[in-house]
Length: 251
Length: 251
DNA sequence: CGCCTGTTTGACTCGCGTCAATGAAAGTGG
DNA sequence: CCACTTTCATTGACGCGAGTCAAACAGGCG
Image 1 (tube, each protein chain N blue to C red):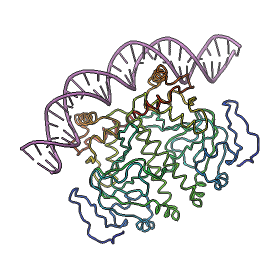
Image 2 (image 1 turned 90 degrees about the vertical axis):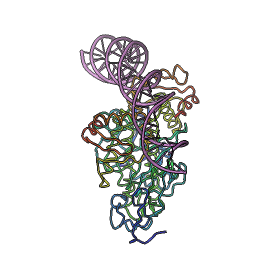
Image 3 (image 1 turned 120 degrees about the vertical axis):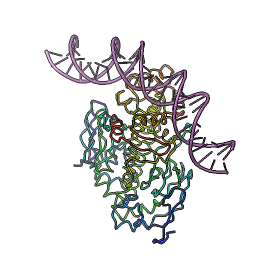
């Protein structure tokens, strides 16, 4: 179930990213970012023991679906996921995007089964953290317990931001907010804050932001004409960060 | 700090509701509804010991504000509250309404300070549950810990519903969803599912639903013309529950 | 009684959704 | 490696739902 460390990591040819399953948490280059769940280095070893590293998840593959039993939360090591739920009307509502270093699957805690689904947007490496183990760990390690609570509560705050965004803002402001969010999360991983790759198709962006694909496309075009960003398909370069922030500050 | 039970409860003249501060959790007529935090009756006594019952909160009075230190969560005993946050642009975004039996203040866990504010919509009785005590209790009682986690995660789910609502739905669907939500929550308290009193002004409704007061008003009027509801200021009667549900099912 | 705040209603405007067509990119099979 | 298909993104023309501005109308409270 758990491999030894020290191995040379395989590089996934498809994305040029590291999707290997053979790194211990302490050695993982995402440690410190990936697992806010246990910042205390003493606790990392214990966390390390309960974490399962699965095979890379290919594009379109589901990590879990709506209604699935809730057994674990997942840390994204590489790639990207989206979470969505299906409304009574049968349409999909994207509720979030998850990038390396982020935790997905917290939605299942309340009902003990997942109320949303998570699917890979591209080939992704995922660490599975069995929740029962996490709870047991949580029994003995107060710091883990608090972290866990904080991660959940953090998710609450992110969702409130989105509520605010969807409630009041124009298409331009919504797009600006998303780009800024992605930029910030990129920077957090020590990547460029100005050059982004959008791992999700336009349809997911529009769905997430409560717009249509056409409006998203038009808004990108207009922002490009205004010299704020340069958009080429999935690649985005932020040319004027201040202007982009200003857009959003009307929020 | 804690009063003895057995006292005759004072009836608040303003609302005709019970806002007294002298009921033990076990005797409280909201027990079982109010505190999903501790459903296990054995645990109620212990929970009882840490709960503080404050004076009734008058309309417009804040329970906490954005940035306040996070010390406690609060159970609504009577009345109603709204939670809101202020966006960079300085406008208010209502993030939720809290009715008797519901828990408000969970937003503070992540940052250890509140990121939203809570204010009384009418005179309300509140039980304060010091979080440090709750955590201590949580250390020894796994059922309390799990409950707490579930309550938080439940909040996540409610917010996701709202995200979905704001992302995709027409004014009519949004209003329908709110009315259905209030109806369900009324029923949960063993009150009428068809006769509601809206404790919040139109401005708060519109803000919450991402609409304007005018649109809310017009939508009420139209729904009344269609024979689905009867609206008289803060009083709403649902005449055709099926039709109302059907409105929303387009969601 | 008259102020103040909240609600309703109407007329007008505009941003975004809808429908439709074109264009670009990626995946498939010979 | 190159046609073929399929999916995704962009652009344009048009209409509608909800926002804006403005005014009339309660209701609650001093």
